[in-house]
Each structure stands twice: as structure tokens, then as C-alpha cells.
Amino acid sequence: MKPLALIMLAAAVAPGQIAPTLKGAYEGIFRIGAALNPAQFEERDPRGNPIIAAQFDTISPENALKWGSIHPRVDGYNFEPADRYVAFGEKHKMFIVGHCLVWHSQTPRWVFENENGEPLTREGLLERMRDHIRTVVGRYKGRIGGWDVVNEALNEDGSMRQSPWYRIIGEDYLLKAFQFAHEADPRAELYYNDYSLENEAKRKGAVELIRKLKAAGAAISGVGLQGHDKMDWPTARQEAETIEAFAALGVKVHITELDIDVLPRTTRQNTADISATAAGTAQSNPYTAGLPEEMQQALARRYAELFEVFVQHRNTVSRVTFWGVTDGDSWLNNFPTRGRTNYPLLFDREGKPKPAFAAVVQKAKTN
Image (tube, rainbow, N blue to C red):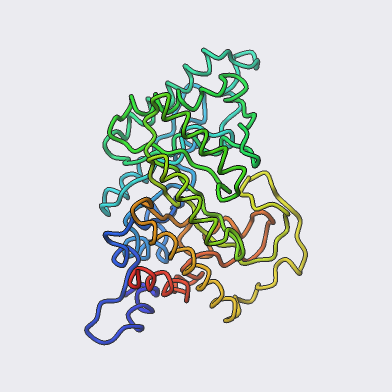
């Protein structure tokens, strides 16, 4: 039996023609990917797995390689989920991304403390970071092609986030993280990844950060723009200016966690900070019965606008990865407000391609 999504695609083309796919449309332009949950990389998702195999040529893990998942105890690693994730990517001949090595969130408290619960010294935390990175990157050397080495090190104003990494080690914790990752796998691409870099203040801070890292000899090859976007933010101009700012530094740009929130705002800021939660009302969850056609078309136009920018900057943009496969998988059903029904991706809850899918495919053909 053909998966529903592929039946839908096949019905949209003339007899004898091959249904379009995202990876086929963007071959030679940039890679197209999705973030996978355990059911998907363990091949237990009958709706999502055929879409992943047909549509994408690169994958990222939602959680399997974050510190709290892979290294939950000071004396023990849990490699089984990550091993299955990497094996899935190899089976389907995909470019495999590792997300992420150093982050202030989803990192156990013990990482920053000694056996007495006191803060580690700078030397102690550097040694713990080195051991983790060498162990994890070393295990997948030559198999994972690119790593989000440091995730979300900046505040919204572009200043350094006062995370435990920063407070204990200092600003050079980023340089050390890139150094350890490069030593563990000299051929892997290494990225800095963050959200809201389209905002001018944060973008300026990131540009200065990348400039300093490169000047200090960090083997940083790319910057990840998370791409947790709204229907009205960022503008096409903001997106283009952001890509161009990093291109000027000689690094590639990756759109790493793309989705578009179609629901009314419940927070003031354009942020993907997972601590920025908010209560909702009936008015903030208006599409429980389905996304109206006019909103489907508006979402399609919004995706087309963004992909036009990405394609225009194809010499800098190396990858576009969606944060999820179908609308039902999306974290935006519970962020920033829990229990809402959101529609941020290209495939609906039944695995059918939405009008936004056709709009994205068409942008590859017209540029």
C-alpha cells in the first residue's frame, strides 16, 4: 500500500510523470531535511517514515544527541537511541546532523557540579566538556557529517548568555568546544546554532562572536539560523540581510529548525527560548477543527517568500531542515502555549502535502 502522502502527490501530476519531492526539486541547490523523533528513526511511524524516505536527504535528531539524553549520568552514556538515529540516516544515505554538543538547556545539573554539589572549577568543567565531546563525536566519527557544537549562547540583545558554561569557564568555552569537536573528528562540519538572529541586535552579537571565533582559529564552518518563524516575522529583507551578514564572514548558513507559527501570539517577543511559555485562551487556539483554506494559502505564500530568499542565496545556504515531519509532530502544538493545534509544516496530520508543499517545490523550479 502506498503511503497517503505519496498517493496525494501522484494524483497531482499527469499520467507518466513522477510526483515531485523536496529533495528532488532542490537537488543541486541545497539539502532539505527534517528533525526526527524516536518513533521515526526507529521506523515505528507508518505515516511519517515514507515521507522522510521520499522527501528528505538530511536529518537532525530532536533530542537523541542532547546531553541529557545521551549522557544522563556522570558515569554512564546511553548510546542506543543515537545509534539507531545514525543507522537510520545511513540506511537512507542521508547527510546526518548531530544536535547538539554544548547547550545550557537539557543538560543535567551534575555536569556543572562536583560530588558535593558545588560548582566545578573552570578546569573541571573543561575536562568534563572535553570528555563528553570526544566520546560522543568520536563514536560517530565519519558517520555524522555536521555538528551543532554550541547552541544558543546569546541573549536577545546580542550579549553573552550567563549560562553555567559562561559563568564557570568564561567566554572562551565556545572556542574550547569547537577545538574539542574538531580534534574528535577533523572532517566534520561544525556549526554555531541560534534563534532570532534575524533581529538586528542579536545578529550583530552573533556576527561579532563568529568573527572572534574565526580569528582565534576555531574550525567553524557554518551558522545555523533556527528559523522558528511567524507569519509576519522575519521579513524577507531581514532574512536576506542575516544570510548576507554571515556570508561576509566566510561561513555557510544552515536553516536548521524551520517552522512557521500560524496561531495568534501569546508572547511579545519573537523567541524560541523554551522557557518563554505563556497561558492561552480560546481565542489563541482558533483552528482546532482544521486550518481554513485562506490560512492554508497564506501559509503557502509565506513559505514561498522565505524559500525565494533561500534560493537567491544558494551559494551561501547549504541546508534547510524543518523541525518535524507533519503538523502533528510539531513542538509548536505545545510552545509557547500548551495544548494548541498548530499547522507549521508542509505535511498535515494525515501526512498529506499542504498547499505550502507545492509552493516550496515551485520555488525551486522558478529560480
